[in-house]
Image (cartoon, rainbow, N blue to C red; front, side, top):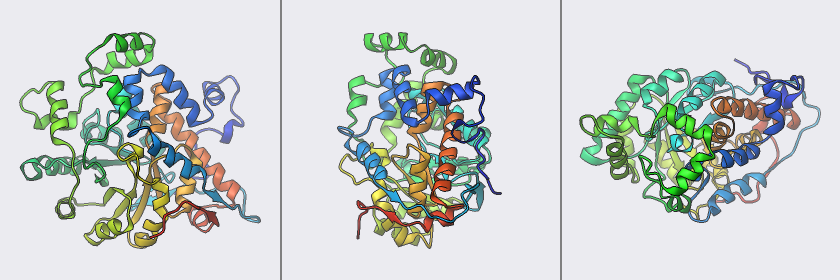
Length: 411
């Protein structure tokens, strides 16, 4: 299944009617940064900060971006500069590009109903969609919307000997999730000043500030009226009979979190019948330990700079982890991906694929329901264009490039 520049529209907008909606969007939003700026205007701050903000003073968010920007790749001359194959195989399944949608909490706070838009876009584009434990839709609905590309991300719920966690695994298996992604980089609640300044609570408790902001965010308000107050329906079955959204939010705050031990990961490995990924690894020794107990993949991530402000950039840890386990497991990457070029950088450094989160939500915030489709098209095109410019017709050629990555960690 080769995707020869398979994005829906002509690369960089060539050949697209200048009066079409697609052409207009390309002129207004040629980059993810343009989408971010528009989303910041269209989304109330209580929603925008839940996604855009990081831990502390956002130094980790900036470090992720800066480290990716500093990576240089040397183009090769003489290679076929024509169409390229962007398709990849991950855990035995074919996808159209080395790109996926990462799990994100509070998506429906950023834009009510966002999860449905992202799931549908991933299905249409044939890229992985990772539904989360604290998603705004139940995992069963996510699986119906994205049956060919659905993965499930699990947070730690340790009460009653992981009763809820193991039941979520059972439900994910029954719903047809292809990959279980277990997140290990949330041992405690991080301090995120943007969320604190906005006094975020679920369900929303209107203040004069939020009412005024909502008044100038009609698209967001319309989405809220259609979809209702955000909640975490994956957790609803564990909150008693007919729980309110406040009950579910309180359950999530009380029960979700903590760091998985390797012994716990072994138990989940035994329970899950399919590929299993550990997400949030930043040290090669931890990656080696995870692979030694039977995990199939390692997702190098610092939670997008949202947990530990002083953590290294995730991309700077990638080469050492690839060296440690790349021959034995599938290595994935997330944290700071804002372009197809960032995806190419991660693949050139040894990742099998890179996942993005904020970029897709910025598309929804800036454009609306079809914003996620716009971002998938744009990023896949950017992957294809970068590969063509580098003289790399496929993923193997990308990994053979000469690369300068001065900030990479050595162990």
